[in-house]
Length: 85
View (cartoon, rainbow, N blue to C red):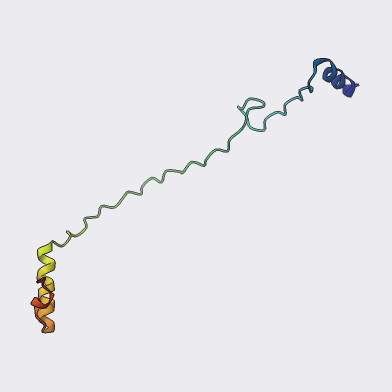
């Protein structure tokens, strides 16, 4: 009898009979509504604070030049060899 009613509704209405929607397994969702997977929430970790870091100041051009000159002199070479002409 069930199939006969579906056949009659198909013939007279011109389209397939709508199937009943399955109840959702998630509470709070509407029947037939698409469900999206939810991202997990990252738990907050109390007590962990970002440590303060004071990096050493970067060397200036003058400091680099002085260090280069001392290293070249220590090896016994001439600084003029490395200068532009």
